[in-house]
Length: 557
View 1 (cartoon, rainbow, N blue to C red):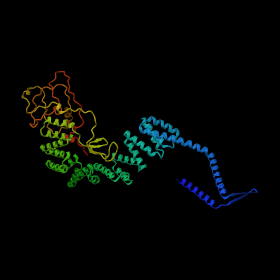
View 2 (tube, rainbow, N blue to C red; view 1 turned 30 degrees about the vertical axis):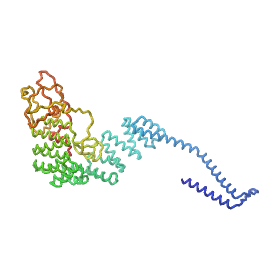
View 3 (tube, rainbow, N blue to C red; view 1 turned 60 degrees about the vertical axis):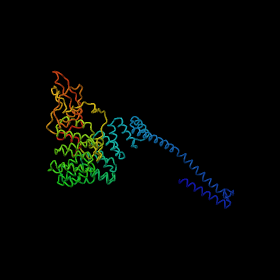
C-alpha cells in the first residue's frame, strides 16, 4: 500500500513539473566540442528524465545478473524447505490418526529435506511413531534426548510423564510433573499433574502451597481453587482426626466454609465438633448438608452424636433429620435403621417399604432382609428380599472417572483430578442379563393352607431353621448363591413346611426365595451334585461387623 502511494506521488509530481514547464516556454542552448545545440526546455526535461530512467533500468539489470546465482540457490532452498515441512505436517497428521507406517515414511522424507538438529518437530514425530509401533524403550530414549535441548526440554518432560502414566509408574510420573512445574509454573498440565500427584501421595502441605501458586498465577479461577482447597483440607483433617482431633477441627471447619456442598467436609467438621462436645454446631452443619444432599454417613453421625443416647432418642434424632428432606430415599432409610436398632420393627418396616415403593434400591431390600430376620426369623422371606436386592438398582457410591470406591478420596486414582469423586449411582456395565420373571417360577404354597397329607412325605423340610443372630455376615454369600441355584430335575412333592409368621400368606417365587428342594437320600455311590452359580459380588456380601443394609454403603472414613 505504501509503495502504491509513493508511486502515485512521484507520478503526480512529474505531471505537475511538466505542466509548469509547458506554461513557461523557453530554449536550452548547449555548446559541446565547438558545436552549439539548441532545444526547447520541454524536450530537454524529457531527455533528462529518459536518461535517468535508462540508467536505473540498466543498474537493475546488471544487479539481477550478478545476484542470479544466489537467488537461484535461495529459490531451490525454499522449495526444499517447503517440501520438508509438508512431509512433516503429513507425518504429524498420520501420527495423530494412528498410522505409524506412514508417519515413519514421512520422517525419512523430512530428515532428507530438513536439518533434524534444527527442527524439534522431527524429534517429536520420531518419538510418536516409535510409540505407535510399540517401541516404548526407543520412545522413552528419544524423549530423554529432548531434555538436553532447552527448547525441547518441556516437551520431553511431558512425553516422559505421559509414558510413565501409561505404565502406571506413579513415582516417575510425579517426578516428571514436578520438574516440569518447576521449569514452567505457568504450564497448566504440569501444575495440575504435580498437584494431583502430591494429593495422591498425601503431601497435603505441598499441595496447598502449589495450589496457592496456581491461584496467584491465575491458572485456575477462584471457585475452582476454593473447591480444590476444601478437598485437600478435608483429606488432611480426616487424616489428623484419629491422632489429633483438636488440630483437625479448624481445617475441617474451613473446608466446610469453602465448599458447603462437599459432603465429606461437612461430615468431618461435624465429627470434630461432636468429639469436643459441641453438639449444637455440629448438628447444624449436618442439617445444612442434609438439605442439599442426604448421605447415609451423615445420618449415622447425626444419630449417634451423643454417646449416652438411648435407641429411642436416636430414633427421634433420625426423624428430625429426615424431616428436613422427607421425599429423599435416604430419609426413609435413616428412620428404618434407627427404628431397627430401637426394636421398633413396625416403624422400620413401614419406612423401608415406603422407600421400596417410591424408589427401589439395593440397600432398601437388604435393610428389609435385616428387619425380617430380626422380627420373624423367616428365612424364606429373608431370601426373598435378598433375591430382589440382586436385581434392584444399585445404591449411590463414590464415583470418579469410572472408578467406584467405597470411600471418598480427594483425588481421582485414574487421572489425579482434584475433587473428582461424586456421590451418585455408578454406571452399570452393559452385558447379557438373564432375568426370569416371577410369573414363570413355581410359587411357595400357602403355609396355613398346606395339605396335611404332605406331612408324611420323606423329604427334607423346605425352610431351614432360623438363625439366632440378626445379621449373619459369614452366611451372606451362601444365601445369594442359593438364590441362584439352577434345578435340572423335576421337583418332588414337598411336605408341609414349618410354621412361620401367619402374616406370610403371599405366593412367592421359589427360585428367588429358597434353595433347591432337597432330594431324597441318594443311593450308595451316587455322584449327583447340585450345580450352584458363582456368587455375585453385589448385595448380601458384607463384612462380619456390618449388617446387610450397611454392607453396600459408601463409607467416608
